[in-house]
Length: 143
Image 1: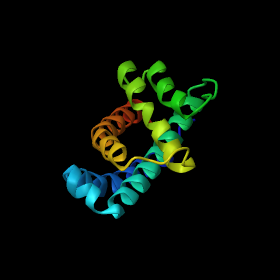
Image 2 (image 1 turned 180 degrees about the horizontal axis):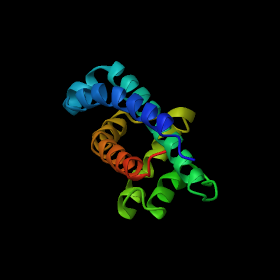
Image 3 (image 1 turned 45 degrees about the vertical axis):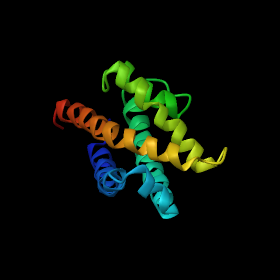
Image 4 (image 1 turned 120 degrees about the vertical axis):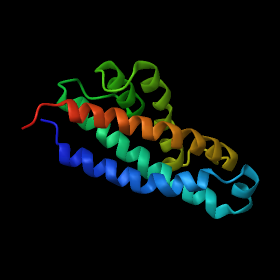
């Protein structure tokens, strides 16, 4: 059974981080790169928000009776498969899982300009993701 309270709490936490990330994304690339703290802030906000989105994904996928996603990337794509996200959007936003992994596991040195670009995309995609999830949750029959 889908836990609306869990999803609502995760959405609230994502929105709490989205506001300062959006403010950060309004800086010019030059201003952003001039202060190394900006990259640390952007990485941490992105890591937290994407992690919470992945938590939501797994909850929705598993409670829809699907097999567990094989990885975080697939968790976004499966929301497209089960109709919570539009198919093209689910494939596009799935790349955020790779960004989260690079930030968390420090696979390679992270290029600050790439984080800036990812942040600009994220502040567009995350509200759309949240809107689709909210619409799905609101469409569920009351308990």
